[in-house]
Image (cartoon, rainbow, N blue to C red; front, side, top):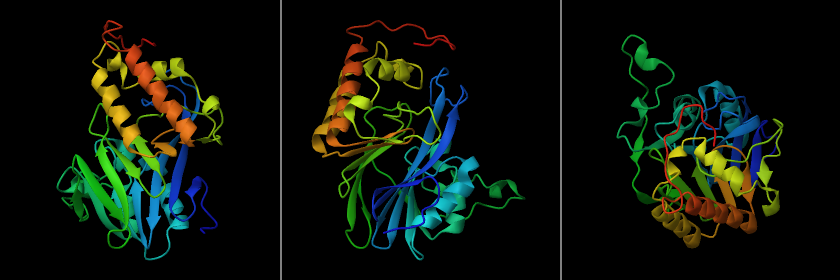
Length: 293
């Protein structure tokens, strides 16, 4: 059991799975949320721990570097070998703190679609200081579908695959040991009125309904879904749900969904919204910059 956790760390599965959370105010400036969203969201990084090794999913914004390092120190035992997996290599929230984490911990590898991850995560300014190159960082290339092993030997299998719904290169991961699906920038539509949360939602009926989800998608990076070809997206999404026994839905922002009924309702709502947005039911139209839908 890990005790004396730093502020913002929540134990999802004791000794095995943690979320490192940084609350952020919603005041119209955060592009991951609709311009009219008000309240608080959370930037979520996840830590899978197994047998002296750990896997970190995303690393947070640079503004949170100090908190992230303190949170990691409170969870990881000395000598833990840490791997880092940015779920979206071209997103600040995923990569900003890879370098500072590598400076403070024994980072074994960084998963990346680029053969030299250090060139993508140089936010410490090394390469801008008189020609100094970024610190070396062992890179493990990602594939469309692959199984990672956390821990010694074959360890704890974690599936990584392309996200069924995405605007940029994005991967989802499924941890068999904790039955957790990590969904990056999908299912991020639940936020709070208070910085303290609550940040876990475990009752299906407490979640917002399909109208809220639809509005969220169309007022963020998924605006293009309206009038699009969503049949294939629905099929891919359903395949993910059918192939995995999911008890926890862990997005990169906002609330974590826990319990099979809660998870099922989220998938069913997403499927219904995608069906309603299909070009068979609705015509696409030009979206003005300040249009809210």
